[in-house]
Length: 103
Image 1 (cartoon, rainbow, N blue to C red):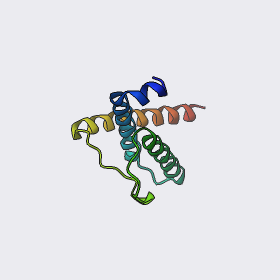
Image 2 (image 1 turned 180 degrees about the vertical axis):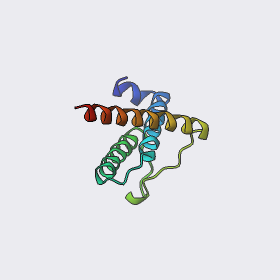
Image 3 (image 1 turned 60 degrees about the horizontal axis):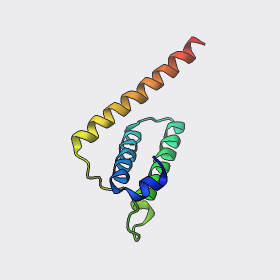
Image 4 (image 1 turned 120 degrees about the horizontal axis):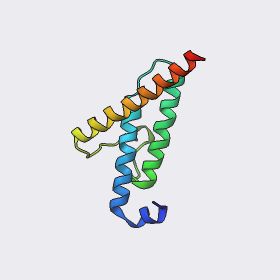
């Protein structure tokens, strides 16, 4: 998918926006007390929000602290995607942990 295709196709922009939203919600569900985890999470959220602002700009006038959006995706879809994304992140972390403990 090229940028031109997305710019001309509202349905493609909507699909891309929904994918970014799912990623935002998945990243937001990651918990960790470690400073590195929190910093990485904030960085990912900032990048994803910037991408979403390019694909689906919001009206100006909202302060930067009010960047959170209300999403109109069905709750069941969101919950399934979050669960799948969190499971993938947990699996990646477990794989990383087992590979470092074997070394």
